[in-house]
Length: 185
Image (cartoon, rainbow, N blue to C red; front, top):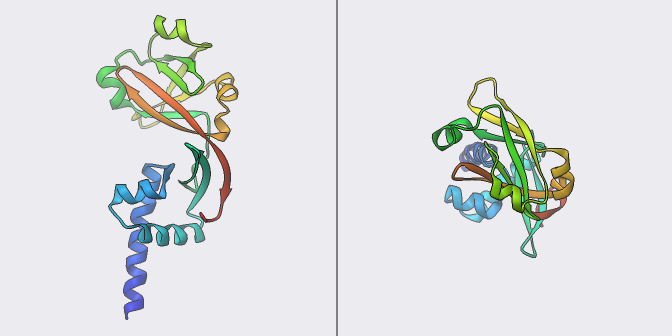
């Protein structure tokens, strides 16, 4: 009887955790525990079960000299595409329409704006104008990071965080992805 209760509770935990991982992919186990207000053991057990069913995968990266295990849903592939909810851009960014401007601001920051910014253009290593797409539902804007930026920042091997700052997007590139592994040790 107790075993059935545990299995049911475990499945419920797995479902909740998988939904959070799909919504906020690339968080560490610690960050997931904080977000859900769960203890480390509950997160750990649920991640083990989700890994066993291949619903998620883990990438190990170096962040501030420490190895961190980042959890991703199985269907997520790292790519050069960035999706931004359209309501975030429409509120303070009416200029986002057909194109955007991408700037290599420094060795760890990419700036993206809906219009050309002379101050960013002045300090950037290089810049480029790109086209924008919208999802079929029209709820997100999709930006493709140019290949030149991908190579410069080595985006296939780095972790990135996208944030909105005023009328602009900032992509912070950090930490080397060291490996993919079955379970954190």
